[in-house]
Each structure stands twice: as structure tokens, then as C-alpha cells.
Length: 266
Ligand code: SAM
Image 1 (cartoon, helix red, strand yellow):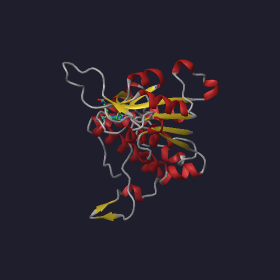
Image 2 (image 1 turned 30 degrees about the horizontal axis):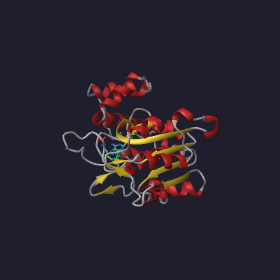
Image 3 (image 1 turned 180 degrees about the horizontal axis):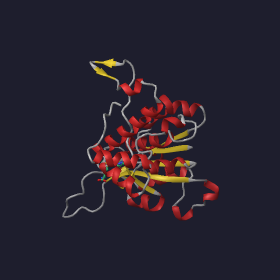
Image 4 (image 1 turned 120 degrees about the horizontal axis):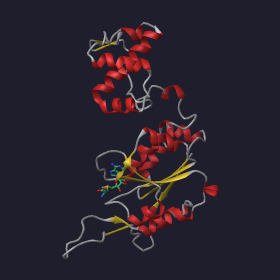
């Protein structure tokens, strides 16, 4: 997988690519990345990349600034991205051009899985009030939002999307770590504990010390359902509608909804 990031601040995503698990994945050749400084494609002496938006009325201008389309289109050209109408997948492989924006469709684990199947992802990082609509119309495949709030920088949003995607690529982390994770199958993750056994008078649940596989598995499933019911009842509804819960999970869910849960420690 290759990530291209078009940005005015390459140092922000660079820190992510050069540290921790991502750095190891890059060293092992599982991930490649290319940081493109959009300012390198500005064409005036001041290397301007933004300007006032059109649409002011009665001498009052629209607030904020917008990223200019030309430097962005040259930056896209530099990584081989053509306008959508001129593309030929047989020469470029599987590639998506993504613009992270609060007005995009919600970014989800499902979308992360779809992106992990691509050969290349090209990200445009917005700044100021965002980018000229014509860049979106001409080049962008997906407008994606990481949540219902507004950040000041596309770099942070793009890094979030890349983080969710690269860990799904074969070999980056063990496949067991991806099992039972929050959002992997409609439920949130169970609580986890490490040493010491007692921390500030709080003990690790007995069942986790029992070594009894079946009891631990059941406890974890119950905890996942309890937590999802508490924090994200919308996910339970969704899981029910799409029939992704196991028969055992459905039964436990009914028990918990009827207030018939047994001692969660055992
Ligand atoms: N004027 C834009 C609007 O109201 O939709 C907000 C622009 S925001 C201040 C600057 C940049 O941060 C955006 O172009 C986008 O790249 C990024 N950004 C901010 N919030 C985001 C979110 N929730 N999801 C994805 N990207 C976001």
C-alpha cells in the first residue's frame, strides 16, 4: 500500500510515518509513503496557496480563505492523478483520491477495510475554509468526515484515516489483535486488565485469573454487549438489523435487556 499525502505542512504526517508501528511497517516494505508539499507547486514569488472565496455581497467579503485550485491540481499531477474523466485503472491500479472534510460521508471501520484493499490512497489535506469545489468535482473520489466536529487542519484528519487503514494491511499487526476489536463485528471491545492483580484496591475480575477458556470467552462476550448497550445502543440496533450477532450474543442481549444478567465477574 502506498499513501500519498498532499499537504501544506508535511512535518505533521511525517511524524506519524516515522514512529512506532507505522515506522516498522515502512521499514519492512509493507507501507510506502510520499509527502507532497503543495506549496512547491505555487506559481507566484510569494508561493501563495490560498485566496479569498467568491460570494461577498454589498462590499462585505466571505470570511476566511480557501486553498487555490492550481497548486493543488499540479500537486495531484505530480503523483499521477488525472481528472476522473481521463482515468484508466488498468495503468494506475486500485487507487482512491480522498478529501477529508467535515461535510463528507462518515469514516467508518467498513470504509477503512475497503481502503485497505486499494493499492494506493491519495489524500488532500485541507486548511483554512477548505479547498475549491472544482478540485473535488474534477479529482476527488471520496469526501470523508472523521466526526461531527470541525478541526483546523486536514493533516490531523488524514492521519486518523491512514492510522485506521494501515493496521488492517496484512502483516502490519497480528490478525488475532484485530479479532473482537470494537467495530469489528457490531460490538465494542470488552474491558482489559494487566499487572498488578490489585491496583489501588481494585482487583482484576476473578474469571480472568481462572485460566478457564470457556468462562473467559463468555465473560468477554457479556461485557462487550453490556458496554455496547450502555454507550452505543445504535450499534446494537444496526447489528440486529443486519443479523451479524451470533445466536449466543442475541440470547445474552435479551437476558441483559430484561435485567436478567448474572454476576458479571463470573
Ligand atoms: N469550512 C469547512 C466546513 O465548514 O466544512 C471547515 C474547514 S476546516 C476549518 C479545515 C480543514 O480541516 C478542512 O478542509 C478539512 O480538511 C479538515 N477537517 C476539519 N474537520 C474535519 C472533519 N471532521 N473530518 C475531516 N476533515 C476535517
